[in-house]
Length: 514
Image 1 (cartoon, rainbow, N blue to C red):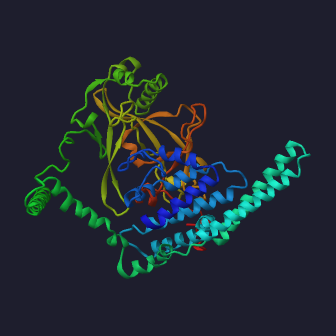
Image 2 (image 1 turned 180 degrees about the vertical axis):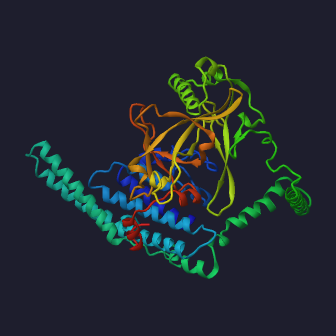
Image 3 (image 1 turned 90 degrees about the vertical axis):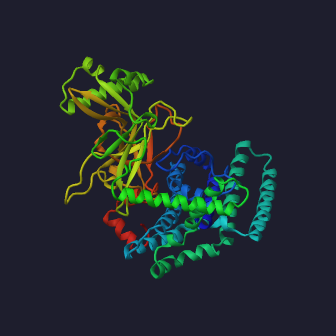
């Protein structure tokens, strides 16, 4: 799937986007994809990568559909159907790939996997013209040359016509030539190659032999790194290196077993060095500045002074006062300025993944401080704004009562002898009440229209890491900003952010929609 079908899809999309003059927008959005928990921000576009490996394609699949949707936004009326087909085809293939990564399956997941494959085959004709062979391509070039000659001869015979009339005729000819070439390549193109056929056998193989991940070559490659590469790099690289490699691996394995035994008996602190003593709130752990065990104590006035933007500084002061009032903490502005405050650059959130295991997500919030020599990193998080009630539809439909906010500052305040954990965030509003778009299956959120759009919330309301992709990078401050909630960023998010109406369920049963 990675070096086969997904790599084919990238090639088709590259030509498709160039044909519709959206490739530059695609690259700009690609480079604006923000970092996530285990994923760095892309540094190179698709064409700048000389050799695509399985790991790079696996990472790319996590944001491809969202980037494509943003690149194909605001189409002309003649482009709308074609763009939607390209998005739905790409989405179906990526989701089929996601289903193939499941550790376990039942009849429902296998049915969804088959539906995704049917959707891919239903919409793949939008890329048929890019599957033409060498013979068809050569014939197309010859046919284009003939049509161009006819066009030029006709325009020469119209030398007594006005320049505007000749230009209209040239434009009409060019549209006709392009349409002829698309039809010619589509008629001569086909999807008859082995890897697209192999996907038909995935369900059968899962039913007979279990999940497909057990056959992944990543397992052997990862073991090769820990068993061979790392020990070799730590050897003296001369003499009997094989004995050195074996001894290093055996000692590392013995230490790992010893550590597991100690952890099982509770004699070792499993939080690791550099994390002990960090403050927690409702299971969340605030990460101190630059990984130190304690953050520097200061006043709220210093926290305000660390915000360079004057407008954000005023909003932080206003939002903090409003937050304390909502928590029934009575304090005036002078007392608030003098309160002891500590700033943190991250937060660790315990999250239960789709397999029922608890994992720790470390979300970063550096404010205006640079992150590893790059731009500041202020991640997006899920904030629980309402709880679902029995018998009622969830708020914000696909988002299920959660809204993505962007962290701008993490700090705590010592107020009236108590400790208040605060997060200064940029808020968003789900479009269409949180209903996913039909083509991409993703939710669009925009800036808040009422109020300032910046609030201070309790750290305990943060439930996990979110991933949002800007709909249009480099948007001016006077333009209303919008983002696409990337539900494909990991399997857990993908299984949580979805919504179907009764009509959509009927379509899914017919194999038209997921």
